[in-house]
Each structure stands twice: as structure tokens, then as C-alpha cells.
Length: 131
Image 1: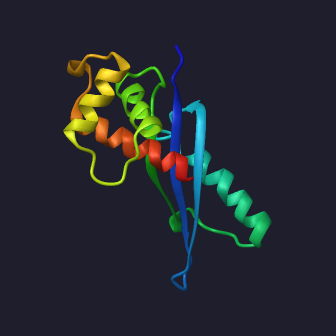
Image 2: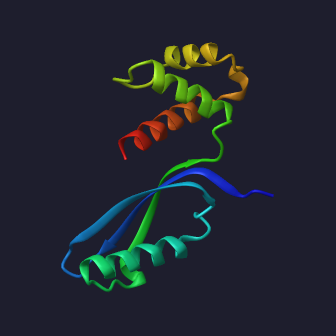
């Protein structure tokens, strides 16, 4: 069984003793579910920081924040949200009109797409574009 997640984005942080914070955004495609395997992200970034900056960072100074988790690009809610992002300019809060238009344009049934989750997906897609 394939347990890979199509898209994941994390904000990784190392916090220094003097209050400084070193942050990095990471986007992963078709990787295992790293929500359950944060050790891998920590070790990869720790190595990069040590090589690039000569700083050794302890695990206690590290944290990560999951920003995007899209299981599959075939999910109906992703398809509708992606259509909205690609075809309509998003300038304000996503409305039920935007939702209705995206569902209708993609030929999906609205019973398969919860409005609040749709809004979250639009935000995740926009974040991925910005990273």
C-alpha cells in the first residue's frame, strides 16, 4: 500500500540561545507521511545548517510546523480548489459563490466537498504557489 502524501510543506525552525530563529520552508512531493517521521526532517536540516553555517543545533532548539498536507491531486476538494486558484483571482475571503462556481465548473458534486475544507485547500494551494 502506498502511504505517500502527494504534497507536504513544512516550516522548520531552529531557535538560538540569543533569541535568533533560523527558518526554512520545505515542500515535499510524493514522500512518506512525515507528520509521523519528524526525525527525518530534523536530521536533514540539522546537517544543512551545520555545513552551511557551522552551527550545531540541538533537537530541543528545533520545531516544525505543518503548513500543507494534500494526500492526492485526485481528491475532489483539491480539484475544485485548484480550479478556483487557476481560473479566478482570489483577492478577498473565499465566498460560497466561489465555491459554487468551482464545484460547477469541475463537474463535481458538492456533497463530496465541504466548504470549510475547500477554503483550507485554496489557502494551501496559494501557499504552495508562494513558496
